[in-house]
Amino acid sequence: MNVRRCAAVALSVMLSIGAIASAVAADFTSDSIHTFVRFSYNHMGFSTQEQRFNKVTSKVTYDPQAKSGSVTVLIDTKSIDTGSELFNGHIQGADFLDTEHYPTATFRSTSVTFDGDIPVKIEGNLTLKGITKPVTLTVGHFKRGQNMMKKNSIGADATGVIKRSDFNMSQYASAVSDDVMLTITLEGSVP
Image (cartoon, rainbow, N blue to C red; front, side):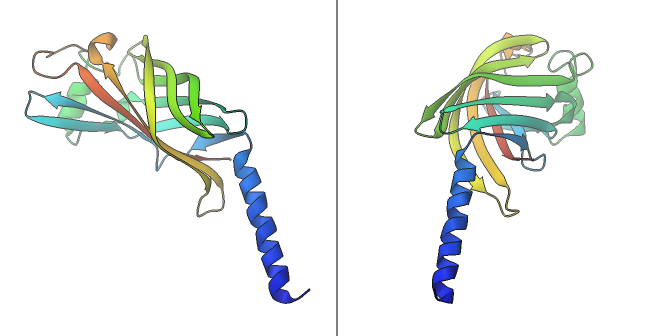
């Protein structure tokens, strides 16, 4: 067998192994540099305000063959980033996140809907300020494969709408929308 043919066979085997590895069930731990929870809302009809939490961890179980999965997201509510230290403190106050009493928010999936081997909808429970409510997230983007560091990885963007009044945060409801767009952006790899 010539050198080119050997190289082609070796490459084919490596690609096949990589495809098999990314197609089996695995647990993925979040990459803290590329995992965030953002939220946006209408402010007095003038603009859409966007903020994010800078400290978010997640664990995702993904099994494309069984078309099953689960997602757990832990949010450090004290890591709120509004772009203003003054407003960060305001949002962390008792009228809103009340981070002194509730320093962590969580999202835990209850079911994942697949289209082929791609997750497209995640049903789950969001716990915020000690209140748990069901939330539906739509997965707008999903990718699995090897990242540049040759790790088996996934990435996803998922969005859903929550009502802040459901979580005892209805202050200024006449001026600031009750509907809040929640976006979870995560990347993770197999440890």
